Amino acid sequence: MAKNKQYFNNNKANKKNSGSAKGKTCEPRAHDGNSEDNKKDNLIFTYSAIEQKRHHIVSPGKCLVYYLGIFPFVPLGLNMYSIGVHKLESRVYRALLFMAATFMAVIMFTEILMWINRIFYVYLIDERGGLYRLRISNFWYKIKNQTYLLNPMGNSGGRLFRMYYMLIGIKRVLENISDTVTYDELIAMGKLWKFEDVSDVVVKKKSISFKARIINKSNVHDKGQKHWGSHGKKKVRISRVYENDSRMISFLQHKDYNESEKMSEIIQEIIQADTPFKKTVRFTLVWTSLMAWAAVILLSGDFAKAAGIRSGEYVLTSMADGEENEKKAYVSVNDAEDYFFVADYGRLYRPILVLYGFVELIYLVSKGTDFLIAMAKKEE
Image 1 (spheres, rainbow, N blue to C red):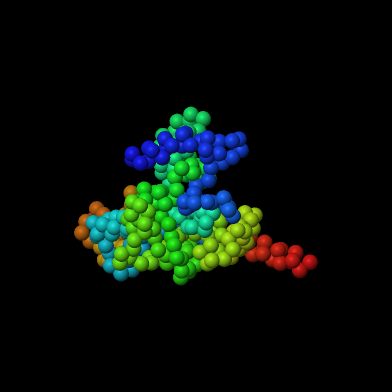
Image 2: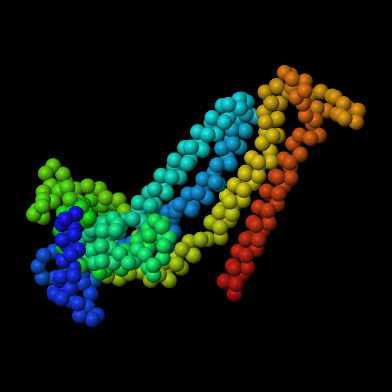
């Protein structure tokens, strides 16, 4: 910490010598020595929701939607098992339901934690062509005394808002790091990782992987000399959730990475990828999930009765209702007071199935009509 404070205190002392003239900004030095020749701007890769959507990587919101969409099929499956195979006792049913809910929740929260971890990492290519990784923290805002960005205009919103401003302001901060601290010094302080000798680059739909020598605090002496010992190259995996994704791939493949994709082209690609067939499948899945929830809520009693009938706990007989009329009823073999009339059982099965099929059919007809109209316009 003493070393950090020394760097921060040197910022003010070195302003006159580091370009305090109007319009001049300070660039970080990747290496000691002259960096004015052939100097380029640093290329910074921060989290991008558009790239995340483009590469079909789930967000926390989608994780929750998937959880809510899949969960009703758990009790439905248990009920179908009880009806068709073997009736589950209430205790076993609740235990299995709890286990399934816990397992799904663990998967959901794991995905959310992975997403949080991604957005707190930033990748950077310096003017010398070195690739670095850093983790967002207050440290970067203190280097050039830019902590005011964490609380703009005196807003007070607690840690959540502070974290939000920290994420959206990191690019501005990294573009103005004081040149009193070199990247090698930041690596020795444990604030940066550097990737050297990149090879075996593999680009997949959701990730980029490669092998590289990782330079960090653990393998750099205080004097800045690198030592590997028994360690060689390691595999590195980067999720494709960062802006300028194509430029990072070009850099890793040792190609020209100066040109970036236009945002309008990326958005157009996302729109075109959302085909009518995919929209239909998505609607079907959402509608099926909603009706599954309706079935679990409205038919749970009928499912339990059906399982009891299937297992022989209820037998069909005739008995008088409150108006002395003979009606068919199922009566428990263990308790004569436990019964239900056939006329009152299973009345919601058909309405739910009809509603599900009717809405699905209307949607398919609507989308089919839109498709035919679009095809006719193309032919014209």
